[in-house]
Length: 81
Image (cartoon, rainbow, N blue to C red; front, side):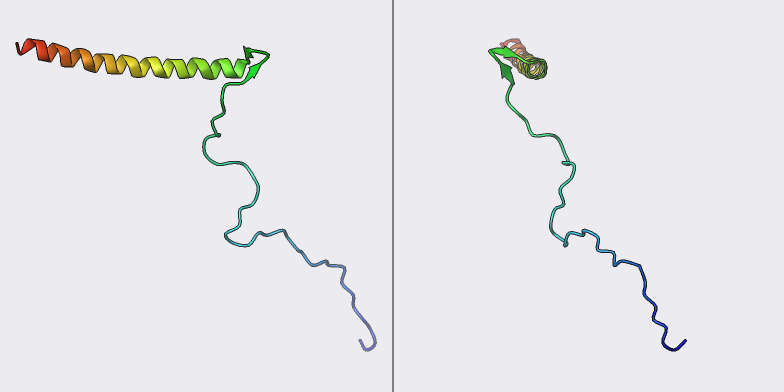
């Protein structure tokens, strides 16, 4: 096989690899960042309204919990008299 040259058509594979320690763009991990209520012309959007209802529900639950503890403390204090 003298004088025969072989040429390959195989291309070098250069993949896009990020060096270690560098973040590649992609899907965000963890919960989405909290955003304030969205308003459109003074009216809450459907998403904003949903968030507001959720926030109010959370506040009510916290207030009821605190009221229960206060009621128990008052009952204990007055039963000792």
